[in-house]
Structure formats: C-alpha cells, structure tokens
Length: 304
Image (cartoon, rainbow, N blue to C red):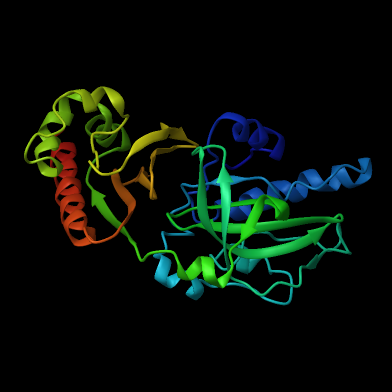
C-alpha cells in the first residue's frame, strides 16, 4: 500500500478489501494517515483512524482459536507506541502533536466482541485489542479470529458478557504456511482455473459427493462440504499480493477460507498462507485434508 493516501484507501473500503499483508503495511496505513491528518487538522476535518478492513493481514495477525483469545498481546492504560503498531501488539498510532487530547478508553483489553462485517455479510467474532478517544470520537482496533484486523467506531462492536463467552463452543482454525518454488501467477492458475479443480477434488471429496456443479459456485478449487452457504467471495490481486477469501454461513456457525500468496520476486519462491475454519470435532481430519491439498497445489504449480 505504499504511496497510497487514505482517500484512495477509502475508495477500496466501499467495494473491496484493503491489503495489509506486508509486515509493515498497518504501519504504512498509519504513516499515510498522519500525512493526511496534518492537512486535515488545518481544515478542521475529522481523523481517519477508524474504518479500515484488512482481513488478509495473516502475517501480523494470524488466526486465533477461541480458547486462546485472552492470550493475544495488547496495550492497556496508555496509547500504543509506533513500534507496537508494527509488531502485532496494537493497531493505531496516534500522533499526540496532532491530537494532544487523544487518550485510551477506560477498558481493559482484550475484549471478545461481535461485529457486523458488511464485506463478509455476517456477524463475526472479533478480539478488541485497542480502544481510544481521538477528536471526541471513540474508535476500536480489533483482530478477526480467522486472521487479519480492522477498526471501527466503538458503537459498531458489541462487547460480549462472560455468560455469552462461556456459551461459545470450542473450535479451532487450520492455519499454516507453505513455500512453493513458483510465481504467484503459476500458483494462481492452480488455485482458480477449472481445469485444476477436478485434479484437486478427490483430496477433499473422495466420494465425489459434490459432483461438478461446485466448480461454478466458487472462486477457488477447494471446498469444505460442511461450510454452509457462501455469503461473500473475493479473489483478486491486492497491492501486488494475490488473495482469496470465501465466507460461508450455516445456522450454527460462520466458516471462512483464506488463501494468501506472498512472492519473493528475486527468488520466485512464493509463500502460500492458509487459514480455514473454525472446525470442531473434525479439526484433525480437515487439517490433514488441507495439508494434502496444499501439497498438491505445490506439486502442480512447480510442474508449470
């Protein structure tokens, strides 16, 4: 996202995801925000700290199993330092020269909350890791359980009670990385083009229960048969990184598949990052399936 202003980012928020998958990307958003804010203060315009959406930031904010949500790093009782917004501890760096009255809200982090995501078209569990007041506006920064991060007005999230948290059943995400000796373009063909779908299908659908129609109903050559109905699909290049996110909703759960490609252009080695779930009793089975599927993607991609 280098050299992109917050105004440009805001346009992407209307219809698409914002890529924050590089290690310094969240900080870059904030650096750009500070540049814009210097002008905005003079014009008495509002801050730009709330309202970004970075579900692909699997580097800085990987998926978190529900049983581990309390263990994520946070900053309490003060505003975050610039370093803490770059190492996965926090999200929003506030320049006190520009906003001298900014302060943290009197809330102990982390907090488990629900947030309606207009992009995935479903209410999601998020971990609130930052809450601040800036320009008399209350803003929260949060991480999605399935990976990535975002921010919103405090009123847009609903903090869960202890009783609500206890009622959430245990579940886990399959999350791992795989280096592939191929370019993003070569891997993208295997991930998305229909001719590869039927090579990959037997790995996750041994009994051929899906038939052939599933290929036309999704943007990726993978499908979890118990995922539910698709609510949102995204499969495009974002600021140089290919990213796929498929969101599903069933009566009793939300399910998501995330596939991110990070290419080293000097070596042509691409890291495939995968985060899928949450799974319950079938976690081990799905982990084995996804690992076999990813190895086959690697084999096909490296074969050219």
